[in-house]
Image 1 (spheres, rainbow, N blue to C red):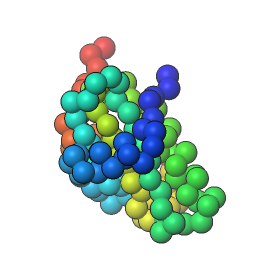
Image 2: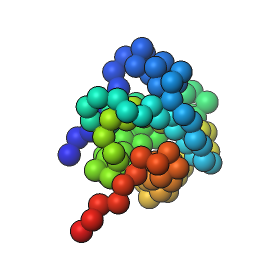
Image 3: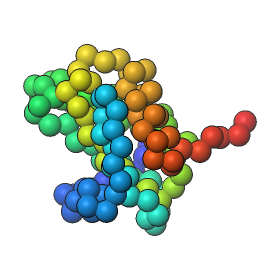
Image 4: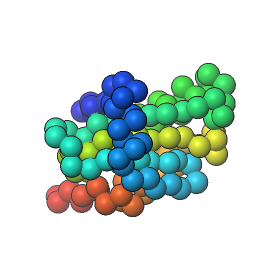
Length: 114
């Protein structure tokens, strides 16, 4: 299932200004809660992280992690995920665990009952 993306710079700025941030070794996550509609995600990978190929790989890993975890996230959130340089060279499972850790830290994670 696909997830909704944040569109333009204005939406990112709203999340930066109004949201709360939490961080771990690899990522910084801003979350703006209680918005209408499904949760929407944006990604930021700056040139500090590496060259173009490395940045695109990190972005793909983040997108895949969010796609995997989106069904566990409560709806109505705006999330911006910022990659830190330490994420370079990490595998999907490490990135995915890092994303899940921050989703839980923001208390927007819900356990799905079997």
